[in-house]
Length: 130
Image 1 (cartoon, one colour):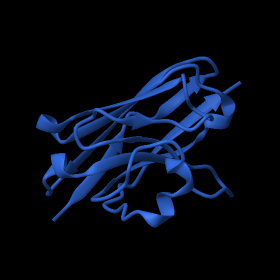
Image 2: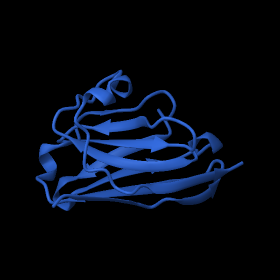
Image 3: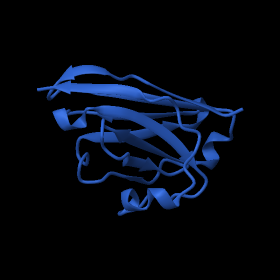
């Protein structure tokens, strides 16, 4: 049985930093492209970063580019999201998911609905106060 679990969320002041972790067990982790997503109350879920199976390719939409960094450790079945320069608009529940096919290229965030992202965790809450 595949299980995903996000952790590392919390409450910080604007300008602060957090590092999220995502562990996905029960699958061959290195065979999957991974993504981080977030959803704020009353808003649609948005993709905020992706990373290829090897970690060689990453992509960030403009909303987080230059502030967030995604990495993965295939030996530990874990993906990370380092978030710096947090803003109040980053407040949301953050989720990770895996896909067998999800090219991590510019425009990825507009096509996430077309990919087979699955194995979602319960999410971790990030709250940024101004």
